[in-house]
Length: 256
Image (cartoon, rainbow, N blue to C red):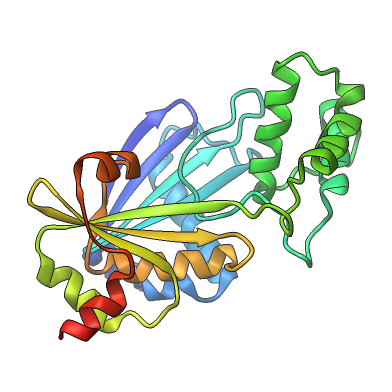
């Protein structure tokens, strides 16, 4: 297990397959019981936080990036004055069974005002980031609720009107690796395959109205079994790469 301090608020932990085995876990286990997963992450935090910089009462987020031979965990201490911009598998909208944005916003405002019992939840970090940006632009805290809710209405930012799209790009050293993934892949996802600088790049596109954060994470984990996180952007692939096929999974299955 390797630990790297990314910045004052974030630790990156790299776990190889053997590290997971020694702790009685596999990558597939991390897609299962939520309580078991959370306990595992906090146990890793206790191992790497030798200087006790991440105090027990601090709010922390765990962001998982599966790899072919293990996984990376980004452990971030939430700082509401400078929220992290790290990649997450979640969409910034509220699930139907969760709190409404008005409730999230009110709790945030109460927290900022120092009211006793005001609860800030890790799963709403994307909302808090948005609110911090508005405050930084000069919006007064007492006006924040009106601005946010009216803005949602006027700009059609609700999930059912304008779903957010997230794209994930995976790199493959050779075509055979992607072809093997395609034979095992049974999910319906917008996808495209590019060639660029003698490598192959798979782009998966997720719309927030079609996938839950867990579904996105599960699907991405499958792709990570055969490829790696790409360091190139979609713009680079579109401008300098070659699009081999817009529906690459079905295309490869037809070939083979």
